[in-house]
Length: 403
Ligand code: GLA
Image 1 (cartoon, rainbow, N blue to C red):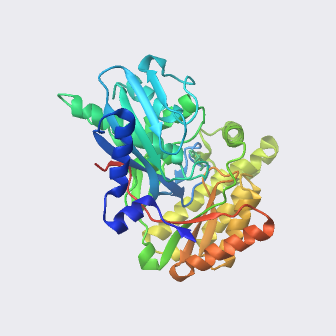
Image 2: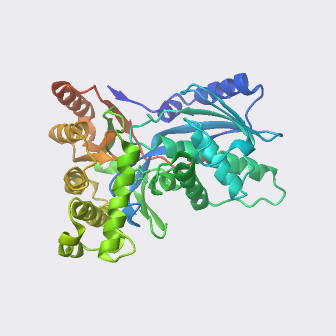
Image 3: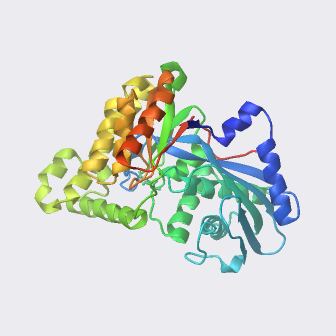
């Protein structure tokens, strides 16, 4: 069974039922109608994993699953947040916001309100109701989607209020959304997810240089290639993600210092191998992953520019192998998903996102979608894993106002 996203259902039915019910749910909680509804997408990363905190290259694709935020400004200085997926509501004075001061899911919208306040882009007094269909902990950036939808909602509402509005640009909002994750939530992430959620273009992958933040939208011609993009959510939640992620980050920063470069973006394979002794293990392998992964992104970009999506397979395979053996962020479930996807006829597959559980992606010929879902399901059952969820995703545009 391949699941459809809420946005696709919305498009197929040609109705606004999802939006109507969100507006009703907002009214039931806030006692008034929202001023608008905003959407920001989750993402899969085609290639370029664990490179964005080494000033490297990434190639994410925003997906048609994400977060909806219904929002209205408040005249006092309170921030109230509700979620249709999570229990508990936030109701605080703006003076109670700040790094580490709010816990649980509402730390994300609260962190964004705080960052926009610090940057004087929005006051942050608002009622927010959050709805989403990105599975949390699946490596599909549900947190970036939540941050970016909140950031755009608060910035747009503020702009509506000002006499001489200055519209903050999307790169600035992505930066603030990332800061919210780092400071308010304590996850030392790179900027890939927030940039993808804010800047992606429908039908395209986003080639991002995380050093300069230069972007290029590359057409992802799935239809022309007769391919589909599948996400295999292993439903094995990120394990130890915070500690292990920070540890990888520390390892590549240490390796850059040993090599005498500003970031591993500037290193070559030869440099890493020549410094093997000084780097020691596992840091040599950690560095090798980053350096080889950056090269794979550039090669994938060439293939996309040439419209040769069907030739991505070997790069996806090499990326997965490097993440498994050198960076050591895969998991038995992810390895099984990738193997079973390729065995079922995928052109290519690999883990996507931070790893330690979460999701794999697969590029699959049109007619093999159901067969692949069945093959992966059977492989998981044989291994005694929880049954995975297979999602058909399509390249979405970045954060925007829907109503
Ligand atoms: C998480 C982080 C990103 C990136 C990926 C790994 O998604 O939020 O910044 O580092 O892991 O590529």
